[in-house]
Amino acid sequence: MSERTKPNSAEETTVLIVEDSPTQADQLRWLLEENGFVVIAARDGEEALELAKARMPSVIISGVMMSKMDGNQLCLAVKADPALKSIGVILVTTLSSPHDVFKGLEAGADNFLVKPYQEEQLLSGIRSLLANREGRDARQREVGIGIELAGKRHLINSGQQQILDLLISTYEQAVGLNQQLETRQRELAQSNKTLNALYGLAGGFNHCRSEAEVAAFAVKGALSIPSVRAAWLYLRDSGSYRLAGLAGLVELDEAAATPQKCTCQRMLDHGELTGTEHIQYCECLAETSASNPRGHVGIPLTVDGSGADFSI
Picture 1: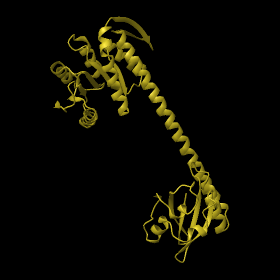
Picture 2: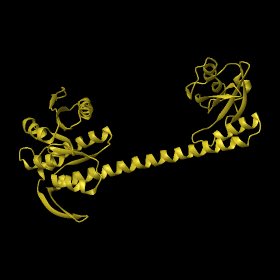
Picture 3: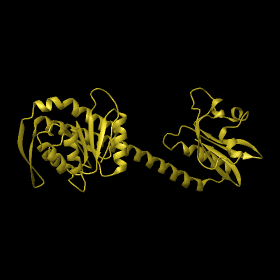
Picture 4: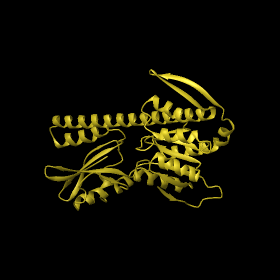
């Protein structure tokens, strides 16, 4: 068990975190203290229960799986103690089954937090508990509800406000997980489009019969990669560069590019461009219209033993 306080205001809020992983406990402590909470910590449910009796925190944040007295058992013990029952309890869980919700309800939990969670989700949950605390205390009439799920009956004996808080938090977690899933699906679709474009490029090169055809196919094919607006290929001949292929950016031509080399070309000359490089500001692009971007990605290539700069 460890304790550390941080001055905040005349009405400091004490949060008890129950976490058997020292690393995760330290991360959670840092987040809460940075937001003005006084933090105390315990390694398991038994230790947390004793600490709650001694310090009377406003909120307990507890994991579910622990070696000594798990999170549900801790919550049940807190809510069964008249001196502790007003403490808000947030259970951190994987929420892998609907039974997890009912176990939390049976134990009297006030809020759920699903791993992995965003920092703002945790802070919002704490604020909601603190804001609804007075209303919850004023409406402590318990209701006995029997619910059957997948052949198992759950008896819920919790205050109406407590049930409402927990169900709302569960709904918010479900919405958050759905948004994360949609984001992952969009990212996956983007990755699939990129892979398909790259496969198409690799296969198409086999049909090119000249340097000009290779250059033209490379820059045109690059436009099929998501988010790529333009592509160009410079080949190095006797220390100078010539524009071998261009697509999607008609303003970039040899007349605009020859007065000065781009950063990626200078890096290539000095052997510093050994992999894909994000060029924040390109002198060549700066010579084109103001509507065009000023940065690009430079990719070094070797063509017939000579260096080449492929950019998108």
